[in-house]
Length: 61
Image (cartoon, rainbow, N blue to C red; front, side, top):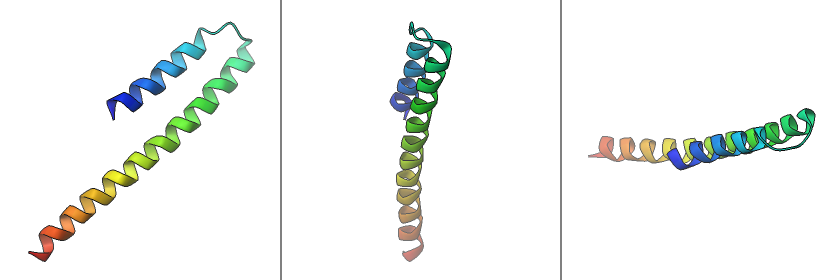
């Protein structure tokens, strides 16, 4: 999880210092952020499913 967050922060910082125009840099950051959000949602769903399965298994005992 930390790797994902660190990668997203690193990408945003890297793009912030890129020699593009401000509008182009902001667009790149926006796209990177959207990809990061999708990835975090996918990770969240996997974790949620695992926890739910674990809880359900404990209930069945």
